[in-house]
Image (cartoon, rainbow, N blue to C red; front, side):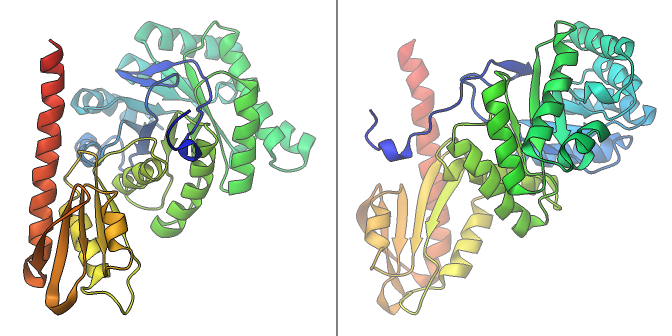
Length: 374
């Protein structure tokens, strides 16, 4: 039993697949995905956007491939990208064949939507020949007509039945390198569908609340839905679907993982909502610090509390902390221990320097561990 059993998450056992060089499922870290919104045929614009997503921490990026111009550009895009690229295919099977041939790491496709069994066989053969995995993407907004007639409306059973039908088409051709999503914009529907699917299959699951909304509302909905499933131990890769730039999806995804202690990247900020007791402007200070520390990738924690009521207690649990004091003079904590004071006008620059120095210290220590092992 762990020291804090109430924080333990018992992850669902799944088999592992590879999306390019990135493992998904099994004991691999939960990965964060996003999708470009540029015209894929414009390779430069798409590559530029992928680069911003990579800098934000994306593990996998998906691009739309609706036409030949897009799959033609995909060759250049795949070569330029530092992360695996998923080709988004909907109805035309030839786009899947082209995408596989030019280096897509994964095909997002619903086998039942691309026509005859011969076409499915062609796509599977192309995936096998090129080392592609696949993602089956069931969506409540595009369920098959026969399932809507059978169930009367999108429901968990309908989404799961659709997923199992698509899975069967792949496994009939001895293809098992796939992951599955059963997305819905309704949080309750999506969560229930994923819970049912998790019990029915052993493949990795791609989590998402589709059409979640704008940056604020969509992040909240996704945090509830994706966060609930991850807390249940369900999910191997996630995408936060927002009406916002894709790098914002990546940041939101990592914040969800950080909140659950599943995966840490960058500075985890613990801060108070501010009140009349605050010794400095907590809201503006936190906003500024988050912006200026966005380049830090090393996992570490920073507490920013406006007064000494809860400040010392929170600071004891973080790498670096600051609590507001009187007369514009505030206490700085290092590794949970009171260390020195800093004045208002120097505070932000001082904290940024401390965080950067701590990150460098952590990175240096991590480099020494493998060397010592040798």
